[in-house]
Image (cartoon, rainbow, N blue to C red):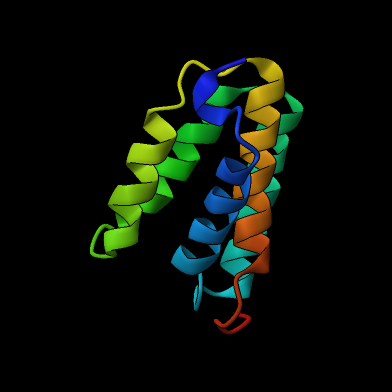
Length: 104
């Protein structure tokens, strides 16, 4: 197991970070993103998953939290299949728990 993701607090930290980053983002956008991310997890496609995540993070580059989260994720590589699932679901749950934003 990767020592950088051994601590379970890392997962809750990632989830909270993504909740903060996606606060106020439209519900429809988050739903579409979550659907695409879940498909990448289902196929165990780490490359596609993180490409989508970093692409979205780059659109919010003015948010100081984004650089922190990007660095945190980057330090975790390489990820085993089970570690990838844990990190991916933490990201997805964080996005799902974000509030605000209008449907539309």
